[in-house]
Amino acid sequence: MGSVLTANIKLTAYGIDKEIKMNTKLTDEILEHLWVLREKGSKSYNELVNDMKDGDIHNAILKMEKAGLITLTNDSIELSAKGETRARDLTRRHRLAERLFYDVFEAEMEEAEYTACEVEHILSPAVTDSVCSFLGHPPTCPHGKAIPKGECCFKYSREVKPLVSQLNDLEVGSAARIVFITLHKDKSSGLQRLASMGIVPGSIIKLKQKAPAFVLEIDETTLAIDSPIAKEIYVKRLGFADKKG
Ligand SMILES: [Zn+2]
Ligand SMILES: [Zn+2]
Image 1 (cartoon, rainbow, N blue to C red):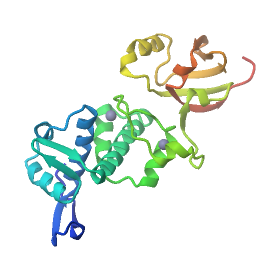
Image 2: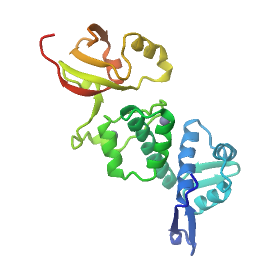
Image 3: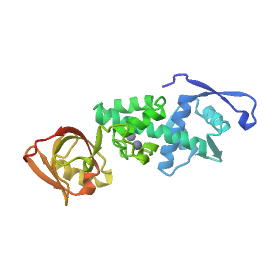
Image 4: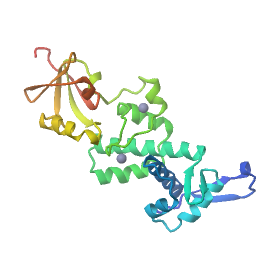
């Protein structure tokens, strides 16, 4: 918060022959918040200012407009194409970092969010794609918000061996620990049903069968789930179980 990271952005491309000093951290926070507002269907200038509560925000917004990151009309504020690219990258890094710290490193949610806010400014594109691959290209953050996809999500690279993968990619006979479940909050009854069967993050499962339904074993109990649900369950492999069972 409030650290003075400044960048000099040459505006010759816009015909303005001077440098604008921009607080890049505040700029990034504004871009990211504009992305969140757009997800809610809002482009209200006032809503942005009220949410951000930063004394310097009006000034920062004017500089961002000059730098071509946003467009302002009446009381609405929107991302330009250039601003959208940056906002998308920031949101992607933030939400992937939340998955990493909350689900894999098991930090408290507050700490995971705080750390995500810091690392979103510094992760390089290559590292971001590695984190994404490592986590099995998760579609959502722990809050259930969409993680914008990166190149890695489309080209399905095997360069980074995923630590986490979808249950349906697990081989029959393997054991794994559940890391996170991406079932949407709308389907909370589905989550409760899974929880009642012991299918929660941290549980150790053995995969017995994949078709026609997924058959798992948890604590000596055998359970069956449908394959669309198996895609929502992300697991970390523990190695092969013995083949007897
Ligand atoms: Zn989140
Ligand atoms: Zn990916």
